[in-house]
Length: 596
Image 1 (tube, rainbow, N blue to C red):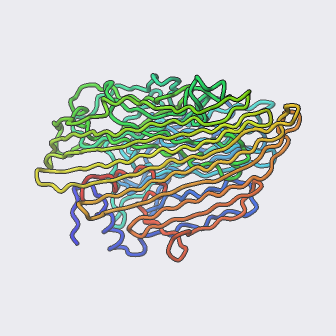
Image 2: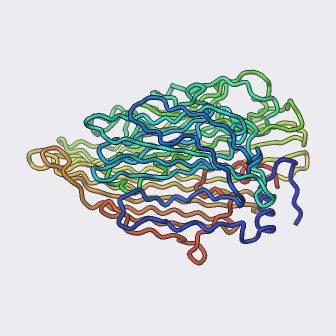
């Protein structure tokens, strides 16, 4: 097998040759055992660590021992590592957080560098006797162009500490750099990143209605070959439980929030639709019933993943040297969605100006519209039935650019579907609501280089399932007696990259949690809980031999079991260093349209 790659860049096969052929088994790392203590009430999650390449690493501390007691700024300064050069195979963000025992809400946490978001998530709630701590890891190699120069940054974690809310949150963060070497070549990172945030220091932007937008006018390089927008959209305030909301006309009858249940991110360029992103139903550690999430929070709760929108078909438009307004909106927003994004671009190293054209955009004529089937009934004050919300559309965007390596044509076809069915049972003895929701995305991208180039195809399928039931029960006097809750939440992503019928790479990720608890009430206040249990299952496999499995089981608020290696050969977790087992965006090796 021969290996060919552009100078200064490498792709899937170059990385594989350097690792599998040259370094054999040493190119794979075995995941550590869970390292959790059965019986512990501290945070325990099944998510995989970021696989690390071989070689000695350099660490740069971003901040240490920050305490978050209010909504003040927490700035810091960054300088590139010394003795590690500027050619890295991987860069990993590591962060550690904790909160003192007591009473405290879940809080949104984010880390910014040069105005760009490098971490977004929420915090674990404490209890009167438990001071939880947790560890975060993110592959931030795509920010290499930003990390080569000194930057200012800030950590944002608004908190309230007073006589009622006593939990003080602390945090530290660092970047770990792995210099490129013969076994771990330089990452094929984007050439530039352009943040979409709240000002030069960074920060999310609040969208309160479906017409609000986060919009930034950018004058971009004129030699863009590829462009990707990583999007975060987190529901807060009135939209924290957006998946439980019903149309305004039924909100009083259903005793639920209004605005409907349909949410979708809209991406536009100069006012014209250019892409969409599904909204993941993240549930905070205080959501629905806080005891359900102790000690294992919901899927991605502590560490959100962005959704990557491929804007490559619009590269020719972005290359014209004119300013362009890139905007993010949330269809159906009805309270507060915190949004941000990062635009990553790859540039032609041999031409300063690329020409081309946008050849198709059927999304432009497709507004985001959901249909609602209301089957609620009211029989003398006893309410039952369901409200179903459905939306689905297919669209195509396509374009080309003429580069130093010939014409590159990109054709994106995508189908996005949303289904949410809410059932209700409301009478003098109970209020029960059930949710059965599923968001799916099927995306196929074909890329062809030159008049006789072979088409490289990537196929991605994403599922965001959510099933939940919650409510309250009442005695004959109308007093609340209990509140049973149960949630099953998932995230799955299948990815295939192929040339013709030859599969170059395939990966499958599945992350799910099943949890339940029942609150007890005395005189209208929570007096206890019972039946807490949860199971988180994480699975990752690819066609190169990587495999990761972990199961975490809790009961009565403590860890009861944790096992590694589920569904892996010999029950052993093995991850090649360049994989993304968490399903974070992976442009450099799996989405690169090149063959090598």
